[in-house]
Structures are given as C-alpha cells and as structure tokens.
Amino acid sequence: MGKPKKNVKEPEMVLSKKDLKKVTKLESQIPYHEGRGNKEEVQKVRDQIAAIWTKTKESYEASFQ
Image (tube, rainbow, N blue to C red; front, side):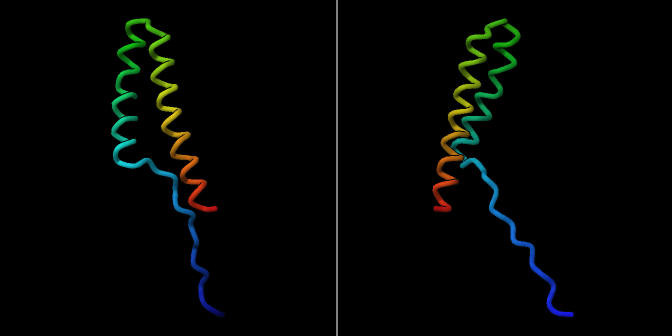
C-alpha cells in the first residue's frame, strides 16, 4: 500500500502589506475617476497597479533562481 503522497504546493505570489495597502488605495480611486469621466486618470491608476504587480512578480520569480 505505501505511504500517501503529500501534495506539494508552490507558494502563491502575494503582495507585501505595504504594497497591498497601496493597491487597495489605488483601486478605490478608479470608480471615482470613472464617474467623473476622467479616462486618463483611470489609466494612470491602472498602470500604477500593474507596475506594483510586475515588481512583485519579478521578485517572486527571482526567489526561485
């Protein structure tokens, strides 16, 4: 019969507390700017959020090398 195999999970990519706070604050600004019809500001906020995720992804991948 043997021993049951253990499920080995990769650690998930998560934001640090500081980055999570920044992303949450930026995400809350999106509906405000969309309501005002300020598409340029919405895109700027989304770019900032994407940059934070990109930085996190790069550091996550670097930890496995």
